[in-house]
Each structure stands twice: as C-alpha cells, then as structure tokens.
Length: 175
Image (cartoon, rainbow, N blue to C red):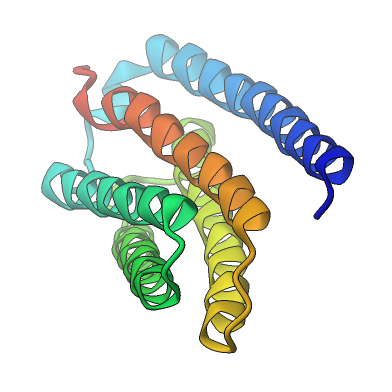
C-alpha cells in the first residue's frame, strides 16, 4: 500500500469509527432515558456481571495480541498474535451469545435497547474477526500486510474502548 492510499485508508477507518460512535451514542442515550424512566422494570432480572467481566478480559487480551501483530515483522509471531486475537474475539462472541440466548429480563423497549447495545457490539467484534481471519490467512501464506494490520488494530482498539464504556453502563449501574 503506497503512502497516499495508506493515509486514505486510515482516514476512512477513523471516519467509520466516528460514525459508529454516533450510532452508539444514540443507543446509549435511548437506553439511559428508558432506564431512568422505568428502573423497576430493569430490576426484574439481570445478566451475569462475571461473564461480562470475562468478555472485557478477552477483549483486552485480543487488544494486546493485535497490537503485537501490528508491530511485528516476524511472520511466525504475526501468525501467533493474529491467532490469539481471533481466539479472544471468538470467546467474546461465544460468551455474549450465551448470555443473549438466555436473558432473564422481560422484553420491552428498555431491554430491547439493552440487548441492542450488547448484540450490536458483538456483531462488530464478528466483523473484526473476519478482518483478522483474512490477515491470518494471508500471514500463513507468507504475505504480511502491515498497513492493513494496523487498520484492523485501530478498529479493534475502538471496540475495546467501546466495551470499556458500555460495561459500567450495562452492568454496574444500580437501579
């Protein structure tokens, strides 16, 4: 990737992150307004804070792995780092799916916002997994893509930051 293309791609990723941030801001705003208006409905049940903390840990492990991948020049280390990031992302999606599949909350507008925030984040992690898998396959074939790896790392770190912001809103706020 030449320098101008690299800069354009990086700008594109940052514009996507800005748009995605606005989308999540709307979801978080709707969630908080509905929750503040009907806290008694939310008190009927909750999802596991322990599993959500495990999700956070997996995202942080993936973040460290993708950061290593973005900096390494050794193909074997790149493959290992991308594999760790992919496994961590798969763990996050598995835990998220297990919690969403068995919610203890009655479904209304409030819980719909709650699950929308959480599941939308999981879908974004799946998108990152696809990008990581593409990079991993290329690395296994011997082709390293440092500029693309850096772009995926930027997006991954955004997802981690987003989860760090969502975690207390979804799991630590009292009713």
